[in-house]
Length: 259
Image (cartoon, one colour):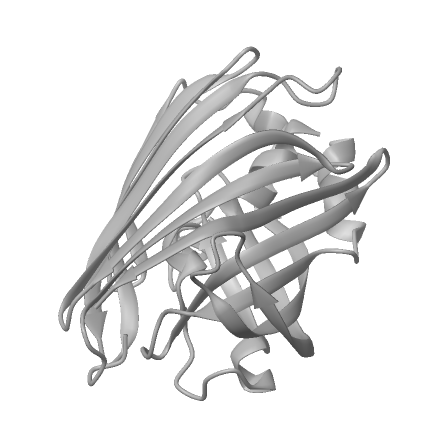
């Protein structure tokens, strides 16, 4: 269950002619309607580079979620409107897991990775090969969607090839609908895209692990994508997943844009 919680948080978690933009989002995490966590996302972009940073924390929720907190950052260049990650760092502390990941990338290929402490049960995991690490994004950079066609089905229909320093996986997105939405602070009001999302493990995972199998089979994941001002980029405003005890929802409650 911890894997599912941090996967949905982590999911949150500009074109060449776009204006520079700086966006701050504050999220809350709900389990069966009860607030159990919060997080922030900061996106800064100019014509040649970008930076994204986030932090989050969860509160104990029975035996399903433990107290924890983490911070994550990524930065890189902008080439032909596409974000090209160069570095990624994650620091996670919880009651039952502590760890740090740092990663260097170059033109979509992982150049160097440091994981502390190292992964365990390596014999049970699908081996990550150099081929797996070519043409990938880190999970934080992937939260900023280049969408030159705006709020259209094409902006949903894509597959994200992701690597978090430990596991290589795909997130398959497909268009579901469009609707109006707003944040609690009233600073965002407008149309959003609703995309279905499906998790596909590729390498680095333990294929016999029950939580991996359940997440791969889960067809309930949805992501709502909202525009960053007048730029050609979208970010998650909301993400949700149904799990055995109910629903988990990450919802943006504050939206502050500086142009």
